[in-house]
Image (cartoon, helix red, strand yellow):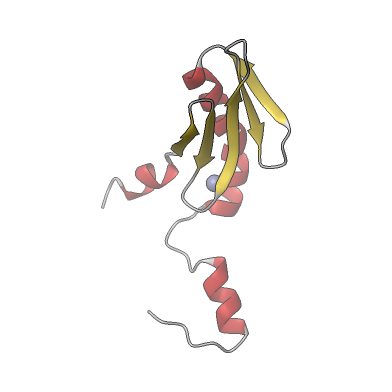
Length: 98
Ligand SMILES: [Zn+2]
């Protein structure tokens, strides 16, 4: 269990096309990266603002993740709490399954 928090913090990168990659954390998509015709990768946050650009996908991905970390700590962590959708379901009187 010691690695739970660490692994929950690592982003997942989903390559949708050769030139399009989406970034997901433990709770949601936090941005995406696309490559232009010159081979330059550009990272966009969840509001489609440019976060970083460069020829190296790993560098750009790292910058995108770094940009999300503050919001991630506040909104996505801590893992282990009741997810927001379950809290909402509970408020509305729906049965909360364990
Ligand atoms: Zn997050």
